[in-house]
Amino acid sequence: MPQTDQLSSLGPDSQITWNRSAALQMLGGDEDLLNEMVEIFLSDSPKLLDRIGQALSLGDSAKLELAAHSLKGELQYLGVQEAIDQAQQLEIAGRDGELDGAENLLEALRGRLILIWAAVTPN
Image (cartoon, rainbow, N blue to C red; front, side, top):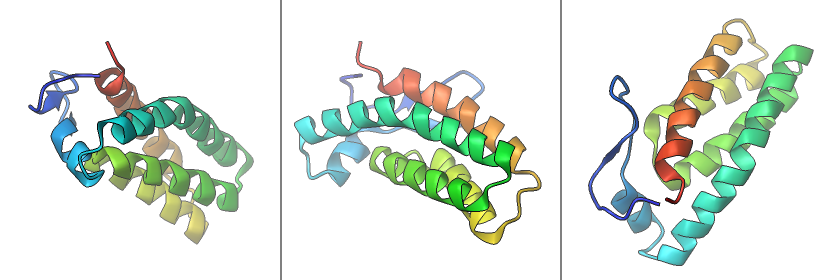
């Protein structure tokens, strides 16, 4: 986990940043809780991403909505707004049964998550 309070850039061409200090503040300054949330995110988010992909493959809107909602919740603890927005768009697509374009959203989210995983992974 980066130990600076500065924004950690997630890539040279990326617009994603993870503000560790802001995430810590959202959790009441509890370092242990932040570390635990990061561990949960690193463990759960790949599984949720797979569930989203499976739901899209099956055309299962309800499963898409549920998995995207769960991923969005985990991302909110990290405060990575770009990824939160993409997960929310997938959640809405599932809720509304509008799966056209959802595959592109998934690929964009997958790219962001790879960068986020790198930024929050403890050294």
